[in-house]
Length: 383
Ligand code: PLP
Image 1 (cartoon, protein in one colour):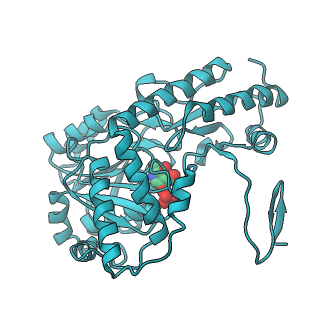
Image 2 (cartoon, helix red, strand yellow):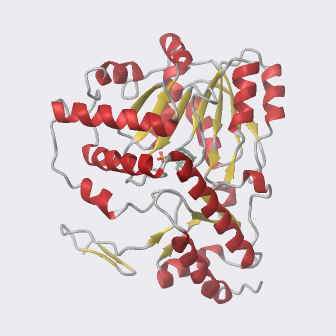
Image 3 (tube, rainbow, N blue to C red):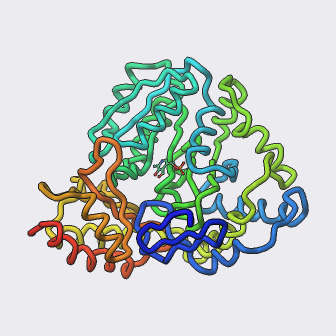
């Protein structure tokens, strides 16, 4: 026996079995059965004709979801790999970068650029509130040498979607700087017209809105980003997108790709395009509204105070004062098989989060509220 934990039993060397739960973390998200089945197809030669068809078809479909004509690459990595690719392919050590952050993932994007030697000016906004585009204009005026602006479109740690359209209008139209976007928890769920908003690099991941397991990330790259790539001196190897472009031209990836995830992706993209990207956005808006209203109906308070900026993929709810948030999420999991996410960084213990992205409908969220109705009084909460 490797370990026994609640109902999960993992025999050593045996078949790992986890009972199905209502997984309401903001990624990984549940994977529909037909996609699971697609992923069990046999391996193919990733230097052969079948792979050429798979990668070309998947890339073209992904471009439709991204709403872009830009180059787009499928990387075998989690979302951070795509974000790392955006940094190391456009910047050089010492480049001035303005990084907008209002949460744990905004901070991580800053850390990433700093790790590679960029001269990062962090512009901090309160966690739970939205980035103020006016501040972006002011900072760009103060730092004309800025090479790029980095921003997280949807801050998963706080449940806030920043006004990327307004930020882009300033960064691109007024100042003509590179715009690097973390769209890990927004792409394929919340409107982000990559070309319409002139985003130079947009990175996202498979385990969020794309209904497949972790293991792939996607990155789009504009012509301006390619110009920067030619000048960029940051070290790069695995995430060198010049190599990715060369290989994609012959229907391959430079390194061995996660084939199983790619099988799932291809089917997921078919389903997404069949549903229609606008319909997917509308479904997420509806489910976001449903979640926020349900939380308020239980007497709970949202972290996001501006209804116009509350995220349609994840809702952060304040742990009521005097309540043990860890006990609440543990009871939800143990007694109701509902898996919620806690707070990250300085919000640890102060919030819990409900993910509502990807393959999700109202009945999944209703189950959360039905369970919360029972658990909240158990932890001592009276509305
Ligand atoms: N950025 C955001 C907004 C995220 O939500 C996440 C993951 O939750 C990441 C970055 C990191 O992605 P990954 O864990 O796939 O590397």
